[in-house]
Length: 300
Length: 300
Image (tube, rainbow over all chains, first blue to last red; front, side):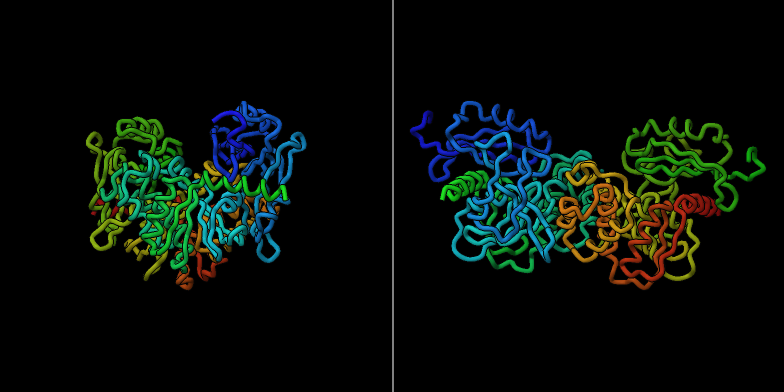
């Protein structure tokens, strides 16, 4: 597993808002080794990025392997702002727009994508474009959902992102749990599938989300929702609200690209909403594969 | 202003979740004096209520004046749980269901109201029932909005609350500002009416609130929203989402019963949404008047 014989050709960096992952990526996008660190981009000054990366990637930065970074390192006020490319955008568009921090010509950052309508930027992403490029999509049009802090619903074709829309599902879940009366005594989600399904159902049938949210409290007071299942119900409400916005077409495929547990929750909610063909993809593998493909395309 | 010649007949207490107000109420519900304290009911153990009240009402509790309490002092786990009355409920229903803490027979707490559908409790309120009873309503049906932490849309007739629905508008605003990326660098609302109107418009035309919320970030990144106006835009989004749920009938009157600044924001949003007859009522005066009327009704 050590040395160069395993074909480590790329150091991949996925610098999220609240988490950093550094990957040794081998031929074909295979992850050889992976390290995580809680120092996400949101809390770092521009000058802090090189030393954090050097520390987390200790022993891997041999000066010869190329380094490719995706995610929030390219956001305004972070390591180096890399301008958003407009959608639709292809693998080649991303590869041609890689950009290096002034102090690190050996390292390149993948640009984020902006959705544009009527000449106006209407949405932004950084990181998910790389995940989508790492998926193995059949020819044709696809709906891809990257669940998480800022969940993305993405229209894509093989090697191309057509458009997308962001939902603040994960971040709202955390903020509501931490900062409102609903969070008092609330545990972790993943305890009660029935409560989750009830939340999804409520959100699918009640368009007034800010009112539906109060039902977490009412259902608890009425002893119809156990406190230890309240996190599942709240999660169901918020994921259900996200899915309600896409319910006009339940027939096409939806590919979930995230962590296993989150993929499973979304798959359950999509099933409740009547989506007929839901596929699962591993988010971490997709990032590695996407970084590899963008790197390869940049060499052409 | 002192002594008994001013007719002080009632000590009124409005014990909210995050704030306590104690009132000396004279004949006809007039507020003679008022004191506020940040020790809301949410942070107090049952045993702490008597001493906090004694401290804030220092010099007013003469042992002869009756004391009437509304709000969260009657919630589960607070001073003494007073069971919710079902809607529809009249002034007499409230007056007949006043309840004293075991240790304080001299003091009575107004019950909250539960909305019921199909035999199930579907919503709860504590405090707004007293405000509504303090309004001077013309004969007929009314829509009353009590804006705030947990905003209530109430269907009422003179002396009767017919039904209502809660929206977590104020509490979500605070939690989003404090706990999400949208709040970074965000100031206070009340700076930019145009940004507020833009938020209302967006919420009225976009049913996907968890996606519309992300537009706070996109509009700021696109330099279309100044950071110091972002709080107004967010406030507009959340108040707009609340109003969007009631837009099927913009013709009847809507009476706002809250603090002046909040009433003004809701009135502006209701006007944008096309509501034709919006009336303003002072929330603090309505509470005092409601406590007085409930007290008077309890003497009959």
